[in-house]
Amino acid sequence: MRVIVEVMPKEGILDPQGKAVMQALHQLGYDEVNGVRVGKRIVLDVNETDAATAIKRAEEMADTLLANENVEGFKVHVAEEIA
Amino acid sequence: MRVIVEVMPKEGILDPQGKAVMQALHQLGYDEVNGVRVGKRIVLDVNETDAATAIKRAEEMADTLLANENVEGFKVHVAEEIA
Image 1 (cartoon, chains in turn green, yellow):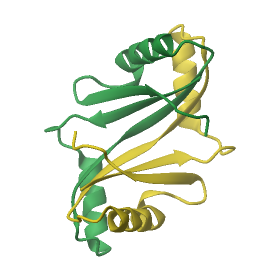
Image 2: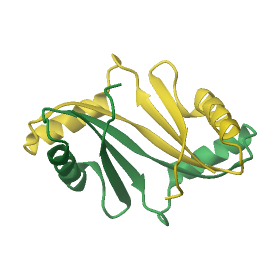
Image 3: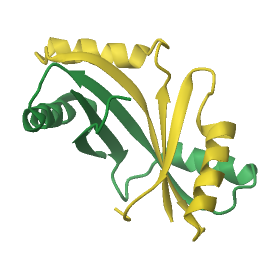
Image 4: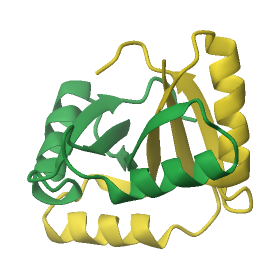
C-alpha cells in the first residue's frame, strides 16, 4: 500500500524557502502569485493491507520523524492508485 | 485561487533523502516500510479566477523554476478548498 504524508509549514510560521520562490517567480514575471509555501511530500510504500492501520502508523512516523511539530503540520492519506 | 504543485524525484532516479528517511524509519522499528521517496509540495496562491489558466501558468512555473526536469517530475492541481 502506498501512503502519502504531506508536511507543510504551519500558517503564520515564517517560510523563507516559500518567500525565496515567490521572489524568483516575480522576477520571472509571474506577478499573479501572491503567496508561496513550500513543504514536503513523502511517499511511503508499506507492507500493510489495512488502510486504517497504514494511516495510523504513518501518522506516528510523521509525529516521530517526518514533521517538526513546532513549525510544521502534516496530513496523511492513502494513494488512490500506484503511480 | 490556490494551486498545488507536487514535485517528486522521477522513478528510477536515486533519492538519497528518501533512502535516509527509510533507514531512520527502520531504526525506529517501522519495518513495514519498503520504499520512501521525498519530494516537494508547493502551494501557490494566485490572483487568477480561471482554473485552466491558473494550472497552465503553474505548469510553466514548474517547468521554469520549481522542478528540475532532469531528475524530477511534477503534477499540478487546483486546491479543492482553501485550507
